[in-house]
Image 1: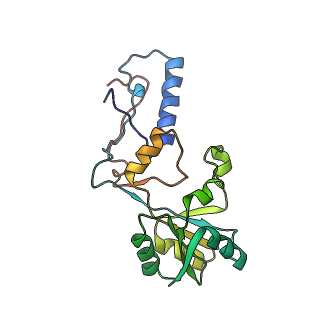
Image 2: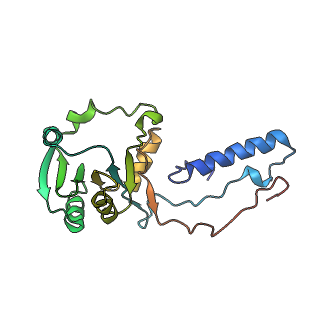
Length: 208
């Protein structure tokens, strides 16, 4: 793997913690190349693997409402179609438009399918170079399934659900090669190893 490039799609915080621990141990004590804290376990999968998928993570807005004005604004950029406010109808719309820039909105009573009209029209609204801290929003929650997203809106935990299609694994790889960041919660890869299936002793005296 010496001449290969790896992309961390899940666990970058654990990796950063492992590097920080390694540096701390190297600074505060004797160590050798085979000291266990110099290594970090990982699960590697080729991005071309047919069994590798990215699961969608839907966005829930706790402070934003879908008004007539906001819907009109969306219609400037998207073709908006009212659809049945059901799990089946929403998932069907997303699946049938998986090759498009497609979204669904649910506000507790109505649902809409959105298809982007023209990519160029929204380029000026995007700022991919802004600091990560500015992209984080405490008023955005996440849901892993369409049903969970709808139930959270129905229960009053959020006011709007934006339902999305998953990104393909190859796109994650291409974006990473450009040193760009994906939005938060965009790389829910599946399958994952069972948590705690394997453990590694990284005590200062442990050797590999």
